[in-house]
Length: 163
Image 1 (cartoon, one colour):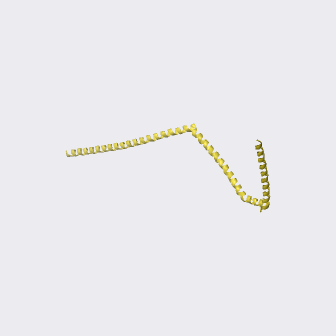
Image 2 (cartoon, rainbow, N blue to C red):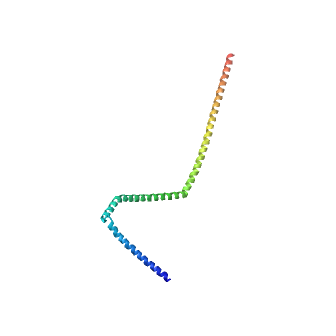
Image 3 (tube, rainbow, N blue to C red):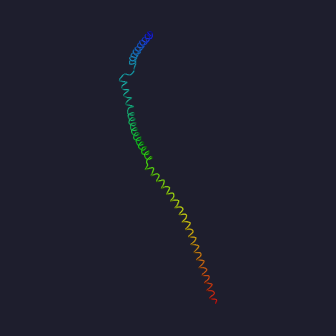
């Protein structure tokens, strides 16, 4: 065990040394970069400000439009939800179901009435045609009877004038 303890302790020490070396190098690199940087702080500030001035109005407008769309979308979602609730209520409503059953019954009665009216119309048309034929037949009989009576009267008148 003592061997493991010393090796772990030495490992920690070497990690600390490496960390200090990296931190020291990064500080040196940062100073070197500041010296090598072609832009001053004021130049960077002005460039940043110009970049913001260029893109900020469009982004602000887009943000407002997105907020407006989100608001409208929320309103539409709420309306659709309300319509779905109404529809689900109406589909399960006993009153609505009974009304549809009543409509179906009345529709069936209407179809029966239409069929009966069509049959009655056909019967009345047949009766009218039959009545017309009977009337024409009676008129023909009356006409023929009158013709026969006239013929007999002319024969009687002719035989009385001969005597």
